[in-house]
Length: 168
Image (cartoon, rainbow, N blue to C red; front, top):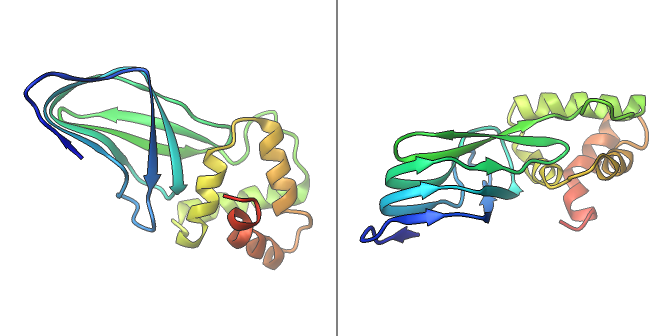
Protein backbone atom coordinates (compact mmCIF):
# COMPACT_ATOMS: atom_id res chain seq x y z
CA UNK A 1 0.00 0.00 0.00
CA UNK A 2 1.35 3.43 -0.92
CA UNK A 3 1.77 6.11 1.75
CA UNK A 4 1.60 9.87 1.15
CA UNK A 5 5.08 11.45 1.11
CA UNK A 6 4.15 14.73 2.81
CA UNK A 7 6.00 13.81 6.00
CA UNK A 8 9.04 11.65 6.71
CA UNK A 9 8.09 8.04 7.38
CA UNK A 10 9.94 5.89 9.87
CA UNK A 11 9.43 2.20 10.51
CA UNK A 12 10.86 1.33 13.92
CA UNK A 13 10.52 -1.50 16.40
CA UNK A 14 9.45 -4.94 15.28
CA UNK A 15 7.48 -5.15 12.04
CA UNK A 16 5.93 -8.46 11.10
CA UNK A 17 5.41 -8.92 7.38
CA UNK A 18 3.54 -11.78 5.71
CA UNK A 19 5.38 -12.94 2.61
CA UNK A 20 2.91 -14.71 0.33
CA UNK A 21 5.43 -15.70 -2.33
CA UNK A 22 2.84 -18.03 -3.84
CA UNK A 23 4.90 -19.70 -6.56
CA UNK A 24 6.32 -16.37 -7.74
CA UNK A 25 9.77 -15.90 -6.19
CA UNK A 26 9.76 -12.10 -6.50
CA UNK A 27 6.28 -11.39 -5.04
CA UNK A 28 5.94 -10.37 -1.41
CA UNK A 29 4.09 -7.98 0.86
CA UNK A 30 5.76 -4.61 0.53
CA UNK A 31 5.26 -1.21 2.12
CA UNK A 32 5.54 1.51 -0.52
CA UNK A 33 6.18 5.10 0.64
CA UNK A 34 5.71 8.00 -1.80
CA UNK A 35 8.45 10.13 -0.27
CA UNK A 36 11.35 9.76 2.16
CA UNK A 37 11.60 6.77 4.54
CA UNK A 38 14.07 5.74 7.22
CA UNK A 39 14.27 2.09 8.24
CA UNK A 40 15.26 0.96 11.77
CA UNK A 41 14.55 -1.95 14.09
CA UNK A 42 13.93 -5.61 13.45
CA UNK A 43 11.90 -7.26 10.71
CA UNK A 44 10.37 -10.66 11.49
CA UNK A 45 9.41 -12.35 8.21
CA UNK A 46 6.39 -14.67 8.30
CA UNK A 47 6.38 -16.66 5.08
CA UNK A 48 3.35 -18.53 3.78
CA UNK A 49 5.32 -20.00 0.89
CA UNK A 50 9.03 -19.56 0.32
CA UNK A 51 11.41 -19.96 -2.63
CA UNK A 52 14.88 -18.59 -3.42
CA UNK A 53 15.15 -14.92 -4.40
CA UNK A 54 15.30 -11.34 -3.13
CA UNK A 55 12.06 -10.15 -1.54
CA UNK A 56 11.29 -6.41 -1.50
CA UNK A 57 9.94 -5.34 1.90
CA UNK A 58 9.99 -1.53 1.77
CA UNK A 59 10.26 0.89 -1.15
CA UNK A 60 10.37 4.69 -1.03
CA UNK A 61 11.36 7.61 -3.22
CA UNK A 62 14.37 7.95 -0.90
CA UNK A 63 15.28 5.26 1.62
CA UNK A 64 17.91 5.25 4.37
CA UNK A 65 18.73 3.38 7.55
CA UNK A 66 19.05 -0.30 8.18
CA UNK A 67 17.20 -3.12 9.90
CA UNK A 68 17.98 -6.46 11.41
CA UNK A 69 16.04 -9.45 10.14
CA UNK A 70 15.16 -12.18 12.64
CA UNK A 71 15.96 -15.66 11.39
CA UNK A 72 15.31 -19.14 12.69
CA UNK A 73 17.12 -22.44 13.01
CA UNK A 74 16.77 -23.50 9.35
CA UNK A 75 16.66 -20.07 7.68
CA UNK A 76 18.50 -16.82 8.11
CA UNK A 77 17.78 -13.68 6.11
CA UNK A 78 20.29 -11.46 4.31
CA UNK A 79 19.14 -7.81 4.25
CA UNK A 80 20.16 -5.48 1.43
CA UNK A 81 19.37 -1.84 0.75
CA UNK A 82 19.39 0.26 -2.41
CA UNK A 83 18.55 3.98 -2.56
CA UNK A 84 14.86 3.11 -2.97
CA UNK A 85 14.23 -0.49 -1.80
CA UNK A 86 14.99 -2.72 1.20
CA UNK A 87 15.17 -6.43 0.32
CA UNK A 88 15.51 -9.61 2.37
CA UNK A 89 16.87 -12.83 0.91
CA UNK A 90 16.24 -16.22 2.56
CA UNK A 91 19.43 -18.13 3.42
CA UNK A 92 18.68 -21.78 4.25
CA UNK A 93 20.78 -23.88 6.58
CA UNK A 94 19.17 -27.31 6.58
CA UNK A 95 22.06 -28.82 8.58
CA UNK A 96 22.72 -26.33 11.41
CA UNK A 97 26.07 -26.80 13.15
CA UNK A 98 25.93 -28.92 16.28
CA UNK A 99 22.48 -30.36 15.60
CA UNK A 100 22.62 -34.15 15.98
CA UNK A 101 20.44 -35.86 13.39
CA UNK A 102 19.98 -39.43 12.18
CA UNK A 103 21.22 -40.72 8.80
CA UNK A 104 17.70 -40.61 7.33
CA UNK A 105 17.25 -37.05 8.61
CA UNK A 106 20.62 -36.11 7.09
CA UNK A 107 19.43 -37.61 3.79
CA UNK A 108 16.31 -35.47 4.02
CA UNK A 109 18.37 -32.32 4.61
CA UNK A 110 20.40 -33.09 1.45
CA UNK A 111 17.14 -33.51 -0.43
CA UNK A 112 15.94 -30.15 0.95
CA UNK A 113 19.20 -28.51 -0.19
CA UNK A 114 18.74 -29.82 -3.73
CA UNK A 115 15.06 -28.86 -3.81
CA UNK A 116 15.87 -25.32 -2.58
CA UNK A 117 18.68 -24.90 -5.11
CA UNK A 118 16.30 -26.04 -7.88
CA UNK A 119 13.47 -23.76 -6.66
CA UNK A 120 11.10 -26.71 -6.21
CA UNK A 121 7.74 -24.89 -6.21
CA UNK A 122 5.80 -27.79 -4.70
CA UNK A 123 7.93 -27.49 -1.53
CA UNK A 124 7.39 -23.72 -1.10
CA UNK A 125 4.91 -24.24 1.80
CA UNK A 126 7.35 -26.66 3.50
CA UNK A 127 10.22 -24.17 3.17
CA UNK A 128 7.97 -21.49 4.66
CA UNK A 129 7.10 -23.78 7.57
CA UNK A 130 10.80 -24.48 8.20
CA UNK A 131 11.58 -20.74 8.12
CA UNK A 132 9.34 -20.25 11.20
CA UNK A 133 11.16 -22.76 13.44
CA UNK A 134 13.28 -21.09 16.09
CA UNK A 135 14.91 -23.93 18.06
CA UNK A 136 16.96 -27.01 17.40
CA UNK A 137 14.39 -29.13 19.25
CA UNK A 138 11.57 -27.91 16.99
CA UNK A 139 13.65 -28.55 13.88
CA UNK A 140 14.70 -32.03 15.06
CA UNK A 141 11.06 -32.91 15.75
CA UNK A 142 10.03 -31.83 12.24
CA UNK A 143 12.88 -33.84 10.72
CA UNK A 144 11.80 -36.85 12.82
CA UNK A 145 8.25 -36.48 11.51
CA UNK A 146 9.28 -35.96 7.90
CA UNK A 147 12.03 -38.61 7.81
CA UNK A 148 10.93 -41.58 9.93
CA UNK A 149 12.81 -43.87 7.54
CA UNK A 150 15.10 -43.47 4.57
CA UNK A 151 12.63 -44.25 1.76
CA UNK A 152 12.77 -41.34 -0.68
CA UNK A 153 9.23 -41.76 -2.05
CA UNK A 154 7.83 -41.69 1.47
CA UNK A 155 9.96 -38.66 2.33
CA UNK A 156 8.71 -36.79 -0.73
CA UNK A 157 5.07 -37.62 0.13
CA UNK A 158 5.61 -36.40 3.69
CA UNK A 159 7.21 -33.17 2.46
CA UNK A 160 4.40 -32.42 0.03
CA UNK A 161 1.74 -32.89 2.73
CA UNK A 162 3.72 -31.76 5.82
CA UNK A 163 2.38 -28.20 6.14
CA UNK A 164 -1.17 -29.55 6.06
CA UNK A 165 -0.40 -32.38 8.50
CA UNK A 166 1.49 -30.08 10.87
CA UNK A 167 -1.24 -27.46 10.88
CA UNK A 168 0.26 -24.59 8.91
